[in-house]
Image 1: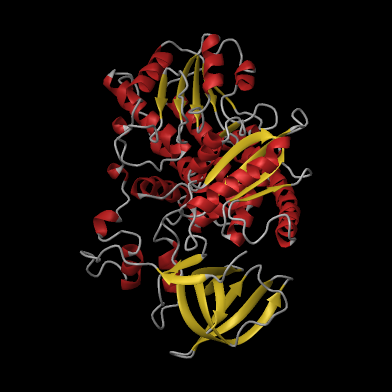
Image 2 (image 1 turned 120 degrees about the horizontal axis):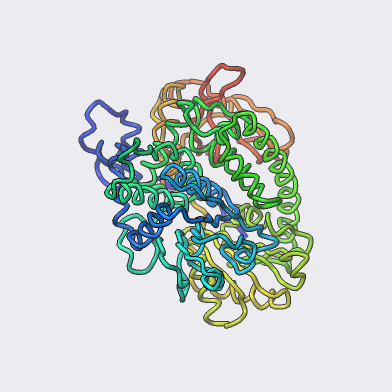
Amino acid sequence: MTGKLQLRRRPLLGEPAGWGDQLHPVLQRIYAARGVLGPDQAEHRLNRLLSPQQLGGMPQAVALLAQAIRDDASIMIAGDYDCDGATGTAVAVRGLRLLGARRVDYAVPNRFVHGYGLTPELVASLPDHVQLVVTVDNGVASVPGVAAAKSRGMRVIVTDHHLPGEYLPAADAIVNPNLHGDDFPSKALAGVGVMFYVLLALRAQLREQGHFSAHAEPDLSVLLDLVALGTVADLVPLDFNNRVLVEAGMKRLRSRRGCAGITALVEASKRDVASLCTSDLGYAVGPRLNAAGRLEDMRLGVECLLTDDARQARHYAELLSSINQERRDLQAAMVAEAELMVAHAGTVDDGTVGVSLFEPSWHAGVVGLVASKLKERLHRPVIAFAPAGEDSPDHLRGSARSIAGFHIRDALAAVDARHPGLIERFGGHAMAAGLSLHARDYPRFAAAFDAVAREWLSEEQLQAVLLTDGEMPVGFCTLEMARLLRYAGPWGQAFPEPVFENRFECFSWRSMGEKHLRMSLRDPRDDALYDAVMFNVYDGTPPPTVLRAAYELTINDWQGRESARVLLRHIEPA
């Protein structure tokens, strides 16, 4: 189903200017390909954050929260069971306590019991004394859940970043940069970022009301490590505003001022806090938190982020690491089954554009990872389904992942419009979404989703392309350059780590384990030799003698000794 991967150089989005000698020319070129053309666009100072007052719904939300603090009301944070939701919940609880709220608790839905978001089932589980519910990273689609909370006499503030549906819940306030008509300049805030912004606005309101006259104003920057983790893990675009938030959080973590929970998770993943980068958050820390929500109960993850006791945090981190290993094993088995489905004609054929996969034995908490892996391999939008659970044996839950140019939530909306009632519930982003439907309707849905994908995606969009930053100049594949690149971000979604392409000669090679390659590559321009690795590609075939390679320049830290390493992303005969 897949064609040959094409390497294509990123175009410069303007001419670099004003750098002088303060930035290496290689970095100037990398930045210019990402729209950063001068020093002012790379200065990630907190005072350059967008104003919280620009977010719609903020005055109403802040007024309710300020009143709740004055009245010593019982506040319940209703979170979500992914990393963004867990960090956002921790930010809300910690932040409100810092600002003077004394009765703050949280509830996180169990995906197998309550479903997603503020559902009527979750509301029914809340204590009677709750007076104000604040959702984090969910709620904009929770029409029945908000109605259930209101019927119990609770006020509701929705803080979310997901795209709204046709109807909004009847909440007392909604703060969401992606609401229709909201003029907030950045639509890329994660759920944790929206909650952090609410706290900033609330602090400003309390300041005006003289709330802090008798004691020092709380420093909300202590929450930025949590904001950074949730933002990176949720794969929202790292626009300038998000890069400011993430960079500030990374600095806290690297200076060992991060919360005990994140520090313990970093150490459990065998990373060094002092040299932490965003990829460590995305590939090591975030998955450990997400694993709790996928297989167990995300309360374990939230408790890890809320504790200030280092010993307790290490205990939580060990439990989360164990659950994550279970998740990895389960994911590997499910991905292998999915690949067999694709390989056998009749399940998914060469003409399929929108791919749907279902296996009755799959785990509903892991299907999103299966969809992600298959999306990468096929370069097609993929939705993986599993049974919804023992309580709903006739229903399926699906998790969707998409490719550039195909808005997956809008695609689900199109299917819903063409086939009313086929999808029971859906929601999400441009690149990821979730849905539920009746098991008997799966074949009809698969055909309808494929039909929309065929209409919306061109042959060019279905061609897998790896964008590169061009050739690394001769002599610059050094440890010094690798260090410079490591901390030049923060890198992430829509602001990707630099990838270079060069012609090399394979001086020597050997396999590592069953699937990996280690090579010594010779640069014919100056005869320099470089250590290189490539993961999950070895099938017994030797690498080309002369090859064209796309790669990242990374740091290999082995037994405390650092060296430059070429991390190969793609190779082909030159």
